[in-house]
Length: 150
Image (cartoon, rainbow, N blue to C red; front, side, top):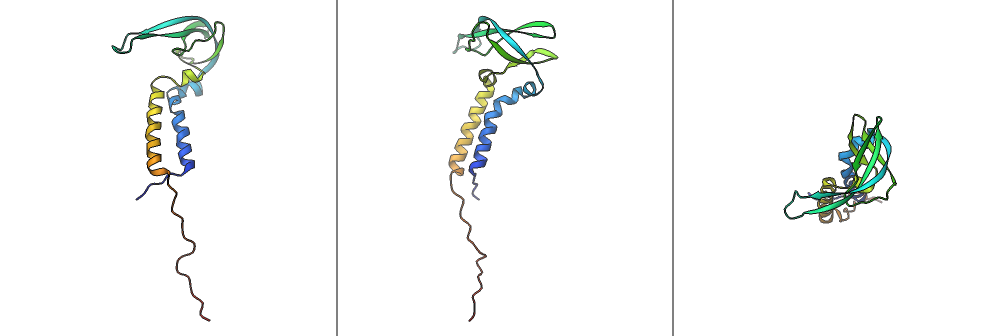
């Protein structure tokens, strides 16, 4: 049995794969509280967890107010915003430490992006192997045509 994947299904699955990194933050995006944060400083995060890949990452320090209290959070790694720049912060009102920034670099970072790229490679391999072929054309009629006797 041959499996064929038509182009609309191929594109639909590509969209689902593109949305995969957002799945970890879906709860925040759908029901979180939005506010505006302001870049107040810059910082450096040192990564000494890995033996091979040691280094430091520049981050922006962002301040926002939730429930009358001021919170300072770090932005995405190696993305430096201008001082005083405003960014949209989405946070859980019960736990403001659970937050995300409404930016592409914040939403598409970390392990979610790596997982999505892996799934994309597997999907492309599957499609190029089985999906790029045309479906066989169906014959018209039933094949049992009645002959006229004149």
